[in-house]
Image (cartoon, rainbow, N blue to C red; front, side, top):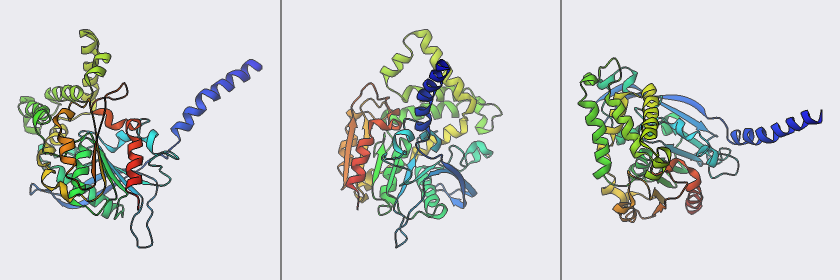
Length: 358
């Protein structure tokens, strides 16, 4: 009896804390908002464009009807809002007493145009899907908030990678909409240099693949494997990759597993469109239009946005209330993927919220 009781107590002591951690923030609610007759900057239109989203918490408005607690968080290229529902992000931010406590904030996690469960080429239009850009994606995000969710002001707008780039555009296009901006793992300048090169490698591989068949393939073309390999290469730092793959055989094993898993759910047209969407990204000429306090965070081991370029510091200083920060490489950083490890930067988020409080 004592032994059994001891086993039960041990089990409770082991499992209960894990269950409590898992229950620290509420499960997100999912929904779809349909934008009618959506006009793209390319001149193309969609009669109906679906934007999928997740929300945590409830919106709060003041006596004048202005939303006080909305937080928009935007994902990266080929990702979705679901990527934030994980221990290293939601588990660090959305729980009781945490920086974006879901009992106080209304958190919005959309799947962007062409991503996740939102309208995308693989739904059926394939290469006939309208050619979208970042400005189209920001417009869809804006209409989701305002028309779909009734949010007319944001306490914070933030994003990772592509979502970080969207954050810069939000600050320029809707400068009075938000109290604070937090772009992560991005640069406020046109896509160029190595950042342009890895994207071209992916898009050229797909477009020049005979099996792509101008987008009307029946089976995924082999070039999707090339895209997956490039995404694996650029998403972390060399030290982590070396630890994961310390020999030739292990390297092939790790890469093959990543690619094979990616091929199960990935789609060549979706990847092609998502990577090419950066064609119209260039916040540089209008950085002075950003009014809200802005904290731009990058990482020293980011292969996509290397700090030695000096672009982050130089361009962020043009933002009236802007501040750049490069987090040094450590055992906890993961190159470009560090943007989703909130432990690395959540204290800076707290400081930004305090600095932008009214």
